Image (cartoon, rainbow, N blue to C red; front, side):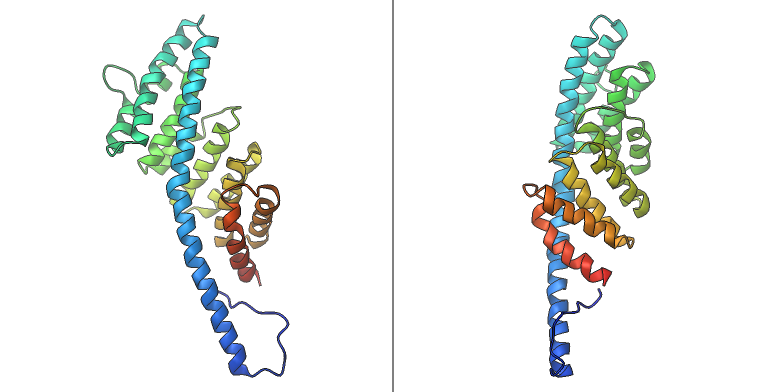
Length: 253
């Protein structure tokens, strides 16, 4: 970590005093980094689950609306019916201790019903198949099969205020897990630019700022954090901004 240069010190002070100040400042930043890392870990551990759950509920609602809208189309009606069972396994996996086996059931099917992978094969071109791509990507994310998650999330398209942003941001998460920070940085930016809202925009601005600081994009990271500070004071990420601004501004000096 670069040493923080305190401004406005008097020239008459001894080198020993200046070194002590620098040492104390470095310790402060080390402490802030430790606290920030714990906060970031909490975000990654809990917010992703919360957002996936929100998205799962959104898909359930959309599938119901799709049923109502496309009830005259037998193929769409049948596809949505199959989607509901797979989605049931998916939502159970989010709150279960046996999540891996349930995610596999959601993907491959069970109890005589199709899984998400069957749906995209059997009902290609339907709204249900499109929604299945999203849930397949999220299932693979939870199974830590990040390459597969990216493949299916990139196929998903939606005008929903949350789903498309979460999909793009999750692709960023997958690239981050695959140690491809430049690609992650790109997708986090796509995620917060897609549809501005109080939920996904500050989340992905913050993630973009963090990973941007890892690849030397200090000015961009500072701008992202300042945007959270100015535009999203009610977001959870707002409480973490000052610590990260201090850390990244110090790196940028």
